Amino acid sequence: MKIVSPHEHGSSRPERSERRLRAIAVLPTLATLGNLASGFGALYLCMLSYYAAGSDLPVVTLDSARMERWFPTYTAIGCYLVMLAALFDGIDGRLARLTRKTSEFGAQLDSLADIVSFGVAPAMLAICVIKPLLPVADLTELGRLWWRAQWVMVAGYVCCAALRLARFNVENVADEAAHMKFKGLPSPGAAAAVISLVLVHEDIIRVTRVDWASELLAATLPFVTLAVGLLMVSRIRYTHLINLLLRGRRSFAQVVAMLFALLVGAIIKPQLTIAVLAMSYAASGPILALVRRLHGAPPGRSDSAAPHSDLTNVRAG
Image (tube, rainbow, N blue to C red):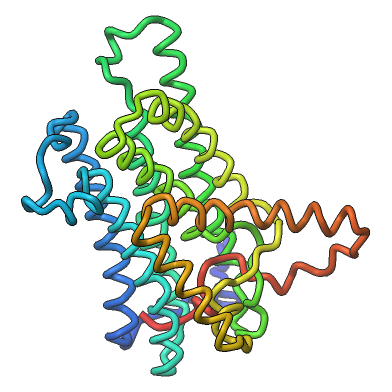
């Protein structure tokens, strides 16, 4: 019996076309890599904090009282590096739109950087705060169980960040008008909520030294971390603050009042100011959703809400 090759009948499977990246845009790519490098730096400082085991507390940063106020520990410096990553994340898409070099490659690279800077790095900074003072082998059975539960909650945050970024990759809409609201808490907003509490904790143990407050904050941090992680993968709508502030018209008095409030907060208690702003934004989604439901407002279509942090992250690398 003759075996007939499928090629003889013209039914051969079409060969897979080769896709090759021809060029990338320099400025947006550098901004995205700055995001990634900042997140990696935060992870490195987590390692320094772990091995220092508190020995960095009595050391004054660069022998300067002012620097010590802002950067009291390795963990605090790592938090500010996550903020720097958020700054890079905010400008890379805008650079791509200004240079008209948006592409799928840029979106994929941005998501890879975000999982490090806004997923893994905040979780590791939280671990630096909640880790047991004693070796795990020396803990009681209840202590080991509590440590495992904390670890699982923080790991849940990382998983939620990955799920959110994956959802963005398949739901992203390139129309800028469709990005005035978000589906769920943006990943930089979730990271800000976590690291703001870490900053307050580091300020407490270095400056005020209120033991009960630092212990209470450390015990609360895993629950907050898991909660903001779940908000990331929720469908609760969040307002795009940058668009709200920059695209709308504001009176001169309103602009001066906002700048004055931020300046006073940064001078008097910068860490607490950051925490209040970050936690307020994280809580704004559920609160506004509850208000809309109580007033019987129609839920509206959420398809126009952006699933991620940028206006249009489909941009060039």
